[in-house]
Length: 114
Image 1 (cartoon, helix red, strand yellow):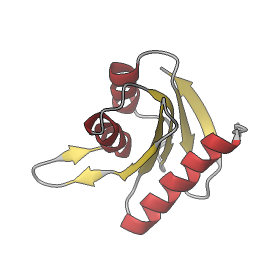
Image 2 (tube, one colour):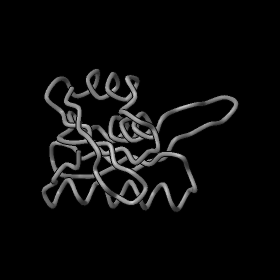
Image 3 (cartoon, rainbow, N blue to C red):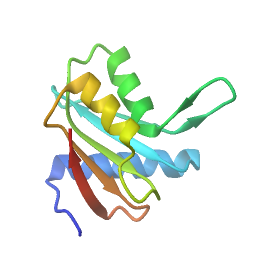
Image 4 (cartoon, helix red, strand yellow):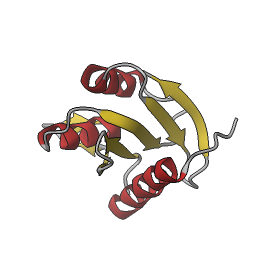
């Protein structure tokens, strides 16, 4: 099921795809805060630190003093939005935040809402 996006959410897909490609990472994510600012990140897999791309993007937003999120995109080969990703978005931003899952080509495959 393909999901149609508005221009602002499509921008998140572009940012997540670009971050993923630049870092040659399995996942890229982008979030938009309540003021319209965006944060993009990739998954981190170090011996001492492991984060999904969504967790890393949310951490960037939190460390910037953001108070909430409007939308989240994750570009991944996974078959669904990871529960850990939905949990971190819900924990930080509460309910009602859309999380879009897109493939490497930028097609949005599905949507879950916190």
